[in-house]
Length: 105
Image 1: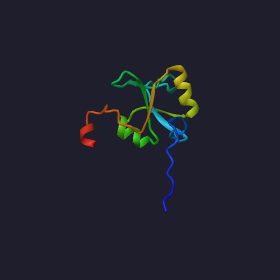
Image 2 (image 1 turned 180 degrees about the vertical axis):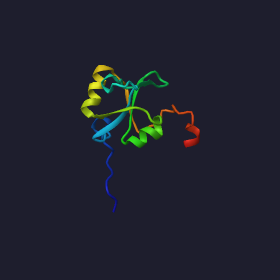
Image 3 (image 1 turned 30 degrees about the horizontal axis):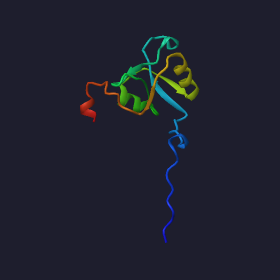
Image 4 (image 1 turned 90 degrees about the vertical axis):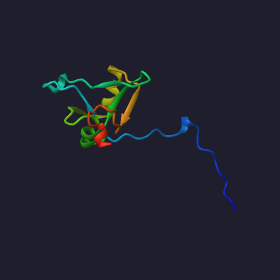
C-alpha cells in the first residue's frame, strides 16, 4: 500500500527561516557607541546586504577578528532597515573580507 504524496506548499505559504532572538551586527568603530553605524555591503549583483551573526565568535571568525559590533533584536533590525534599507540579510555567512580567508576555509 502506498501513501498519497502531496506537493509542497507554494512558496508564499512556506515559513521564512527563523532568526535567533538577537544577532551581532558589524559596525564602524567610533569610541562613542551611540555614534557607530551598521556596516552594509554591496554584493556582486548590486544589492545591499547586512551581515549578522548568531554568536560573537562567529562574527569574529567569519567577518573580521575583533570587529566592533552591535547586538540587535528583530525590532532593531527593522529600525536599521527603515533608516538605511538593505536588500539582503545574511546570517552566519562569510563575506570574504579577511586576507586569511583561504587559510580558514
